[in-house]
Image (tube, rainbow, N blue to C red; front, side, top):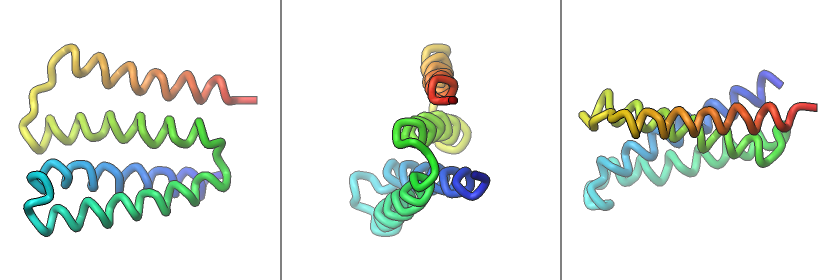
Length: 108
């Protein structure tokens, strides 16, 4: 199970890197960030597919998408100077809460 979590965390990390570079690619007009986007998403899907050998699809996808979304919000605020409004923070918190609830609902 630990290995599946490591695959999933690696999938999330590579998805976050790819998504941040999607912003930096300026509509795929900058070659280096554009390549990072393509490679990052490909790596993320490979890692996610490995995690899916252990996790249920709905649970793994919720964790991948939810934590990835929350991490992208934090990176946007910390590194890209994007504002963190109360509404944005609440939305990210609700996404994480949804992931937690899905996990609790999937427990035997």
